[in-house]
Length: 499
Image 1 (tube, rainbow, N blue to C red):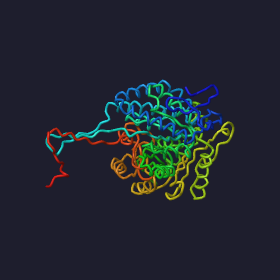
Image 2 (cartoon, rainbow, N blue to C red; image 1 turned 120 degrees about the vertical axis):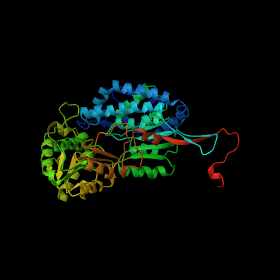
Image 3 (cartoon, helix red, strand yellow; image 1 turned 60 degrees about the horizontal axis):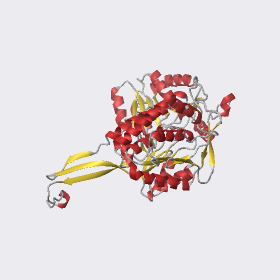
Image 4 (cartoon, rainbow, N blue to C red; image 1 turned 135 degrees about the vertical axis):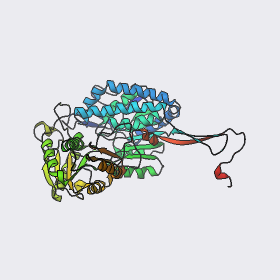
């Protein structure tokens, strides 16, 4: 264990728990109370270099471990995660702020992806195809790439590291993980469990610290062959620029400005259930959060009334309390940003129906709590309808029909998740075809992805790659085509033969 009696934590490099070379540290604190969770090393380029060197050396052997055996280690990790689920859930309510049910779901996501990807150790399918020549065999296989640099966010502090590390590992790569500085204890515990599962020394390493030092060095390091990042669009662009010099493979999972479309024939109560969960789950701090609700005018007033009534019953509080519906946002900077968008919305002329203020009374004043906020009569071009707020705020946008709803839904620069509530099968299939997003839900909200399907988005949400499902394997492997000629003579392929 990296933990000591005074809750001081370390980097994990080459199977050893070590301090940052500089000796500098930072604290992780609870967004609900301000209490200190732990003290962590504030690492620098020297620490990254050490971790990458160790990972590169470990890759030479790990890539040769048969994939089914790599999978067996990950099956052990999945069982450890199951055993430790309650402890991880409790830690997440304190360090990240999620309510119990959501924190448990975050851990369960890691369990599910680990079981799923461990099974890929006995698949990792390639392809065979017939040759154009006699007595010749053609096939393609997947091969690991090398050292993977994983840069993960705070909002899914166990699930997202699992989405990145587990497929990378089963494919035969080694990893250096840089977790978010807001949730380092959860990432640390995840890596501890990986070590307990039997991962060889050097295959998984964790280096704590800021993106401007640890992350930047990792992206620019010539021996890091894959960077996988979940973060903002702005960070993603900087990563692409920095990685260009070394032609590093880059996988980006960036922002979203997701919409729920509600048509006149929708079941309004069901739609409200979906909006509540999608807009205010995790205090709106999800890239798939529903920060827009596009409503056909025939049902607009009814939905607005039901939604506000339900929102005003939601209880704010620490995530570990059983009756809490909405926990804190992650830090003061986030709190101030969210409130700034409330002021922007009011200045733009949107109608504030409920919320729109910092909750500072009593014990809530110790943390970063924001009241769930609903705007009505929002124009699609307003900033609150175009820009990612990443907080418990949603905007109701009235439209005349399905055609307008689709135009409005698509009229943003992101394309992650989308949703439509309707009882019309024709409308549902048009939405499935025409909504510009990597994910579309019918009669459900914008959150709730399953691990065996690809996760990711279009447009400015990323750079075309996907997490989860078999699509994740394409991020962490390279294709190799193999030709076996058993004719006993030189045969020239079609490209080298005159026709």
